[in-house]
Image (tube, rainbow, N blue to C red; front, side, top):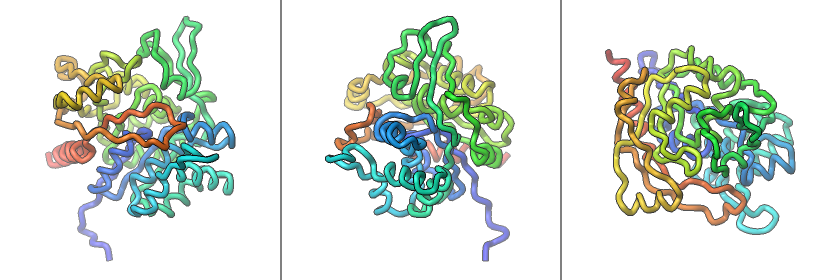
Length: 340
């Protein structure tokens, strides 16, 4: 029998896609089982892009990563992440193929995700941000240049200031009601680190998501990127990242911004440089005058290793946060807010 006086678990909604969400979810599941992963659905690169183009299904890749992060079944996790190294399926992750097959079988991507959740025995819920079949578009007012699809934008070196661009989904997307409900019911909403224009932006511009973030009673926290993305966010500061997050959402909504304040070792800095990344500058004056509270902590994690079988994928950053430290900082903020 459940103890009626037991402390209620903290409800956390993590918004993002790909590696950033995976890192956050893997850490948060040590603190609570009440986790909702709200996943971007604009991905059309790598294995995911091939499956979308050839089979007309919704993108499975980022959903798979979040399912794996929340799973308590190590062997099945490894199975879902296994990538074929040769033959017809070379470069495809098994989990992507399974999610695609389940969608074709049921005709319902939500049901496919639910079935995969049962197979993986996840703690929490993985929620596609929209169930519409959408593609990403980036445009500048008065300019003839338009960029279409996530894979094109991800690889682009912007010739114009991305902060003056309009990010949209084609066709216009309707938010998944489950995603809105998760934001409304959360105690903490975390915007995970990730590419501003291809991972986070496509989710935040969905109709209804920004309003839900502005009106929720949850503590809204953004975990700023560790480094810039070459050709896209060069020279962006921590506050620049936060401004773009709020611009996508349509209005200010952040309560806290968490950033890294540790310098990488020379060896790590050299590896960052190999990826074209420069450590995000901390602009203390701007952060101190912002409406949100900025919190710095040493958040650098180890560099990830590349998967040689991932032959179809676009370039993936190997730079990582220390998820456990980020989660601890966020939980400390929440506990402090609720102890006063």
